[in-house]
Length: 117
Image (cartoon, rainbow, N blue to C red; front, top):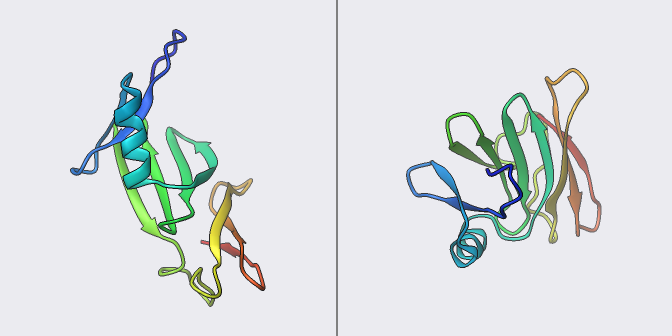
């Protein structure tokens, strides 16, 4: 990530690493393939998290070591509920005030929900 005013784009690599590139085409291709329809950006303790609505994933970038993790939301939730009913998609996410709980909202379903992990 460049801080001197130059525009850079996120490029996800296959080995769970990422880079910042000045090549807009590479950034657009990476977004289309790896994190389409993204929103809900949160930053905490050197990590940047956001949701990909289309792939139903929470993506977390570790800004210190340039690695990332992907988690399919809903598959590992404790209790009940997941984003697979009637067009439901993950929407926004929020790290709670204690920094121990990660909240998600749902969009596009007949009965939208709020989830926490």
